[in-house]
Amino acid sequence: MKIVVIGIDEFGIDEYCNRLVLDTVAMKTNAPRFYKRDGLIDAVIGFVKPSGSFA
Image 1 (tube, rainbow, N blue to C red):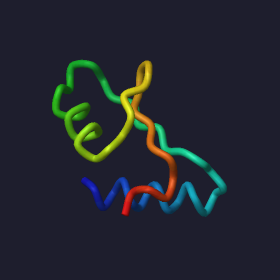
Image 2: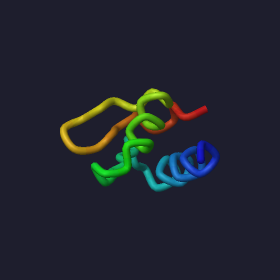
Image 3: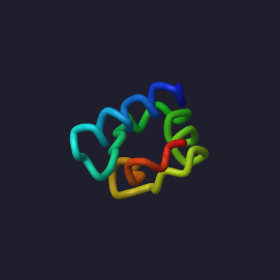
Image 4: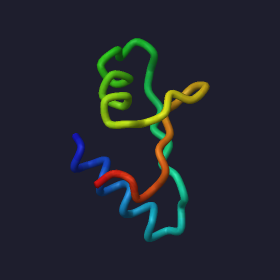
């Protein structure tokens, strides 16, 4: 999964995006744990991490 997130992040940087926002369904309790473990910030509804910080 982490390789996919890194690939999406790199694509976003190439497209001049400055952050990656991942949204999840509330029922999937493993997704928020993955995002938090990977350093994403728990925002209002989704998780956010600045582009280029997924190394």
